[in-house]
Length: 321
Image (cartoon, rainbow, N blue to C red; front, side):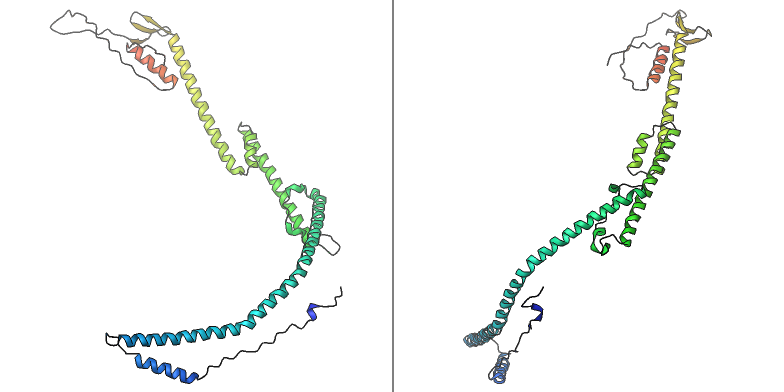
C-alpha cells in the first residue's frame, strides 16, 4: 500500500529551550535575611517586647508570602508551554488511534478466523490418527496451543513437533486405559476368588481407588463375614441343643428328669423350718414377692436365663411390651 503521507518519514522533533530564572539583587537579599535571622536568633519575647515581636513576625510572614507568590507566578509561566505541548500531543494521539482501532479490529478478526481454521485441521488430524492408538477423540486432553500458528507449516499442516506432542498424549491415554482395565480384571478376579460379587469393587476402581487399597478392604470384608457366619453357627447349635434338651425333659413330681439318661436335671425343694428343739416342724409357706425386671440380651441367652430361673423354682410370667 502506497500512501501520500507516511508517518514513518515525518521528522518528529521538538525544539526545547531551557528556561532561565534571574533574581535581582539576589546576594543583597540573602545577606539581609541572614542578618535579620542573626539579629533575632536569641531574642526573648517578654511583656515589654511583645508588640515588637508581633511587628517582626508580621514583617517576616509578609516576606514569606511575597516569595511564595512570586514562585507560583514563575512556575505557571514555565509550565504553560509544557501544558500546551502535552495538549497538542494528546490531540495527535487521538487522531492516530482513530486509524489504529479499525485496523486492529480487522487484524484480530482475521487472526481469529485463521485460528478457527487451524483448530478444525487439528481436530481432523486427531480424529484420523487416534484409532491407530486405540483411543477416542473425547478421551484426549486437547492443548489449545496445538492450534497456534507456530505449530503449522507454511502449507497449513501440523509440524513434526506438534504431531509428536499429540501422539505422546494418545500413548499416555492408551496406557492409562490399559492399566485401568488390568486393575479392574485384577480386582474382579480377587473378589470372585473369595466369593464376593465383583461389580461394586470394579466401580471403585473406576472412581480412582487402587487395587492394593481394595484388596485390603476385601480381606476385611471376608474376615467380618466369616466372623458373622461363625457366630450364627454357634447360635444355631446352641438353640438346637436347648430345644433337644427341652424335648427330652419331663416333670416327675417336683423333679425334672431327662428321659434318655434318667438324670435329674434340677430339683425344686420345698423350704421348711428345722430346729433341734422341735423334731416335728410345721411347714410354713414362704411369702411370695413379685419383682419386675426388663432383660436385654441375645435370644439364646434369654432362653438360658429362663431355664435357670425355672430350675430355681422362680415363676416367670411374660408381659407384652
